[in-house]
Length: 146
Image (cartoon, rainbow, N blue to C red):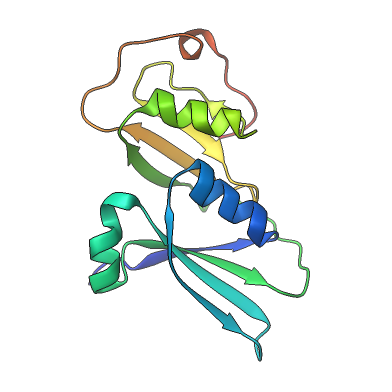
């Protein structure tokens, strides 16, 4: 057995791609439009997983966009997606500058949580050792649920 992907339903494909690709840093690796089923699938991979994604089609995130509007509700039973990042402060700054709320700031230089436009919780973890505590993160309170 091996892990392939996590599917996330999205309500606005452009806003979702801006978040997942432009701000979080994943890359689109393939896309499929299904006219009969009236949906689009967009598969994303982290930069360090691109070779594996090309060879094995994993590990990936699958964004599913249904062309007919739907309302989705989420639950804490889903949990979150987690990504290691080279510099957690730079990643959080890029997201925050892009209008994303940092729900759990990286006060410890190691871990942060944000949410996608569709409310998917994403944990960011510092690659290697935690970075030294730094402002504005060290004194920033939690915001919302994460």
